[in-house]
Length: 126
Ligand SMILES: [Zn+2]
Image 1 (cartoon, rainbow, N blue to C red):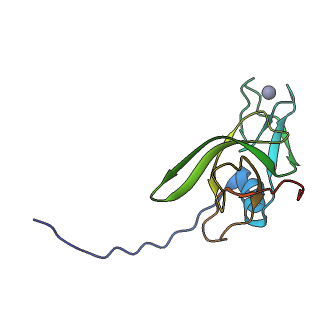
Image 2 (image 1 turned 90 degrees about the vertical axis):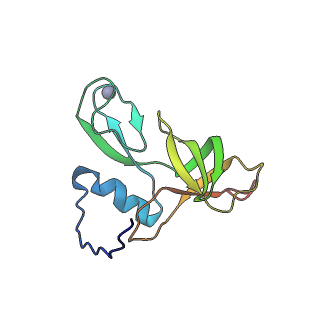
């Protein structure tokens, strides 16, 4: 037996400390955290560093990234990418990449659905 019902849900999300990062995603800017203790940079930002410190500062990366691994699925193309100036890697949604393109830059996203999107950098067009 199956019962079909419509469910509506209104909600408000607050991003707290991560507001700066999410605001950057909306504008197509890569805003990262740098640990004040060991200087490790993280994008996406890690509120607590691997060294256990929670003291950190926001700064902006160039937004350029190298793709480490790509995958495709029914929801689109995705990758693990390392952003220039960051010590960790990020899961990104790929937009408009050809199979041999492995360099991209962050692009802005739909304000109602913050996400980390990468568009290709054409060689000689950086
Ligand atoms: Zn640290």
